[in-house]
Amino acid sequence: MGEYRDFEQRRAGMVNEQLRARGIDSPAVLEAMGRVAREQFVPVHLKDDAYEDGPLPIGAGQTISQPYIVALMIEALDLEGGERVLDIGTGSGYAAAILGSIAGEVFSIERIEELADRAEKVLTEQGFDNVRVRCGDGTLGWPEHQPFDGIVVAAGAPAVPEALKHQLAIGGHLVIPVGGEQGVQYLERVTRLSAHEFRTEDLGAVRFVPLRGEQGWS
Image (cartoon, rainbow, N blue to C red; front, side):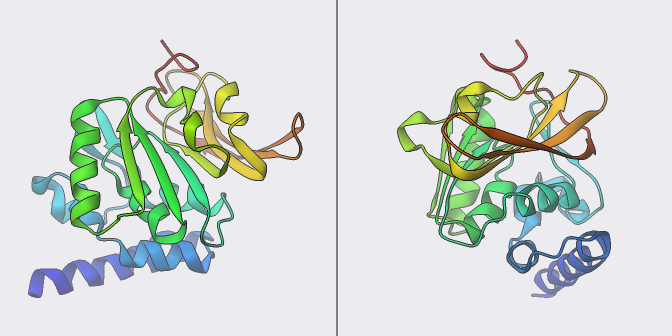
């Protein structure tokens, strides 16, 4: 019980010091980040580092993003609850769990099979029965379940994949890092205004692993 309480305290500290203090103010995002047990989504030997202010390795050359970046990207989706969301780059499954705490349905795609399998297992164990995970090319989206009210991409693309733009619902937001394969990218929020009209906003500089796939990096 002591360990559980300790993680609860660290989680509350993370929400206050890393999120609220930096301007994250969405009640839904803060509540979800304060509830989801991040320590369950990192490798066992890194549990003590789960609430550090930075990314952590999760195997297969991938990382779990810094808590602030997860919060920033999900806040930018403007979710109110009950939406259908597409999550590209499942990784550990942590962002999918945060999304699953807010949205109605989450469809998450991971290209590395061992990560997809592990994330699916942890999400099930943690009770997220509204999150579906599959292994595949995230740059092509999940057309069978479109349109999505929100799409979030946890890897840097050379340009915004057309497939993802066209799977957005009218009024929906797509949040994605865009830029070079190495170094800094820029977090973009693309809003679908109509069938053929999109608005793009720059949310600031970020650094992500490259988005691999047919409409990403080869």
